[in-house]
Length: 269
Image (cartoon, rainbow, N blue to C red; front, side):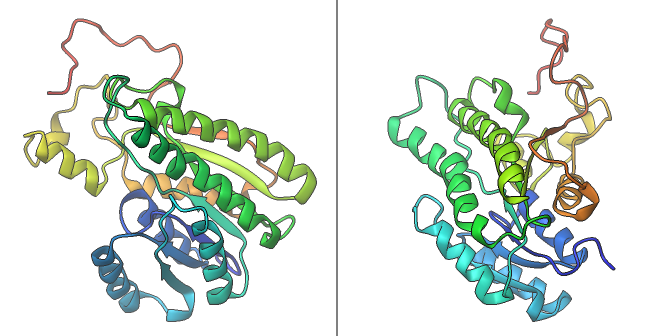
């Protein structure tokens, strides 16, 4: 039997990047999966890709604006309508503005919190009545930036810090009261399609990853989305046992106590 046989999972923000890798690995592990994304062109591409690879009964695609409070209930209802059950939820979707204290407006700060913190809260609230005791599992996708963040990732970092507290709180209380596990993955630097695009926009060449300073990438490369996905599938599965309330940093170096050189030689241009 596959690791996620007889499971049905919602993965938000799953038409590209880490979310898509998670959803595809869930499918490969035997789960039924509700994909989610706002961009019509990406949903169309995904529909074509899934139709060629997986039985139609194993997947569905939904669009819902996570800034809207009703989106959570819509996604849960879509999963139940498609699969008749719900055993897992992956809160992956995120809004990532590159702003600091001076450049962050109240509107932008509010939007970041709505997508990155409030939407996961509402989705957990909507999903909980349908998650089976002893099998239900929720995985929140945070960020190593939740610990303090980079100067130009202020609202994003704050939102992921709040998500971490939500995970730890619910990981304890929901396990005790409902037998539902809640955990979090904090990815480090991941080579997604959007990261590739951003680096090209910054003027870097196609092979920019081949010459990363080892202070940022001791392994000589950064993470692939599939490597993050593998950890998420484990936490969704019965193989994770009673693990709950845990925040796993998926990074190449310790997040606390590290002292990189400060001579400027390690900066990424």
